[in-house]
Amino acid sequence: MDIKRDDSCVSCGESLPAGTRAVWFASEKVTRCVPCAASYVDTAPGEPDAVAPQPPVLPTLPTPTLQAPTLPAPTLAPPVPTPEPQHESVAGGSAQSEYEKRSARELARKQQKVKEDAERRQALVAERPILGRLASALTPKPTIGPESQATKAWNLGAKGERRVAEVLAAAKGVEALHDRLHPGKGKANIDHIAIGPAGVFVIDAKNYTGAVDIRNVGNIFKPDWQLYVGGRNQMKLVDGVLGQVETVRSVMSAAFPEVPVHGVLCFTFGTWARPMRAWVVKGVTSLWPVKLTEHVSVPGAFGPMVPAITEHLRQQLKPAS
Image 1 (cartoon, rainbow, N blue to C red):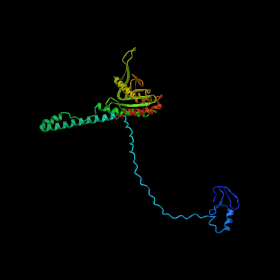
Image 2 (cartoon, helix red, strand yellow):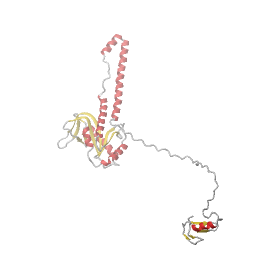
Image 3 (cartoon, rainbow, N blue to C red):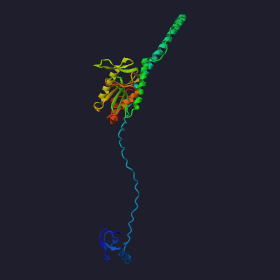
Image 4 (cartoon, one colour):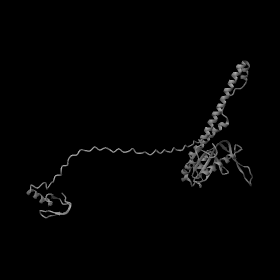
């Protein structure tokens, strides 16, 4: 074995440092170097297993059968529900829904009138066959004609809002929200909100036809510019947008007080009485869809904040449709 401590050969006296290969004679309790041990074994055959002691034979024990301990079932925490993404309104959704309701009611009224007229004619003929047929022939029958202009206007409004959404989608660096509820105004909605580098734009889409123009109803010393569409004063539209601007500004005041909010009227079917240019009255810009893309994507200092502003407004202004 390799001895564990310094020793010396009992036969020749050679020093045996720790780690030296040597033979330990247990019966004599002495150590000999390997050559002396070989000579000693040759001259002392009766010495018991000095050079190569055999390890003791251990009794064979049966292999124990191991069983995994029975552990109590772990108590699982209840699953955390994944929050559902907030529903996004579709551009023109409220107007389209209102159109479908009005269209269905109008059609039902017309169908009821046709039905009642047919029943009345049938009863008249049954009561007075000759005069009844004559009266029926001379009396015009109600028909299911085209929808009223008031009902069609909602359909046109929905189409106009979808058109505005298309041009906003083409504006680089701009995110848009569509058809959001106007808090405190019942079912009233804000058509579009565009968030761009120059701030937030509250956009009201209008399907009015006719020339869009501004007129000075004051004088040269005290001008009073007002919006006209198709020859009619439409300052009520400007005031409506200003109310929406104040609402959006109020929900942004705590988180983004430095971001400006602009008002926009987009006339989807209007024409311009003079060379095409955007008109500004009381801070509200009136323009057409193609011009809107350029208007909301002008450079500004708020480009990096666009995603955060959009998410803030998405949470504060709920979908209308």
